[in-house]
Amino acid sequence: FSGPVPVTRALTEDEVSVNYEANTGKVILECFRERDPVSCPAVLVRHHGPFAWGENAFKAVENALALDICADLARRSLALDPTVEPVPAHLLHKHHSRKHGPHAYYGQSEVTNDY
Image (cartoon, rainbow, N blue to C red):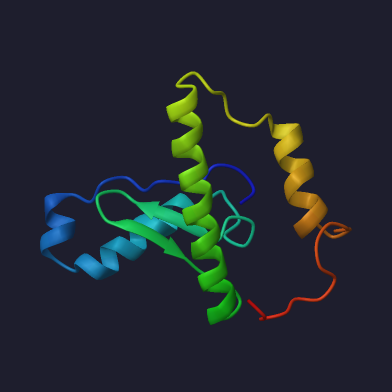
């Protein structure tokens, strides 16, 4: 994820009582008005849970697992040190771009589905 995973605003009582599923989609879209959903293929819907996507079902599941691992690492980091700071932007960009950027060089050159 290229930065923090966004968290939606809470749905209003009216949004929950009428067209709940459509309104859930709308609050997800609000989070990506100024953010690329490809570079951050997940969102946490407040009072609901995670949503993840990808170019196919396999990538969507992979992104959901990555989100779960990142959330667990964040929880453990905060348990060890409640004052822990986010990764600096320049380091976050380096980690993301070396694997997912146009000149990626880290990781597998070919994706396999072998787990």
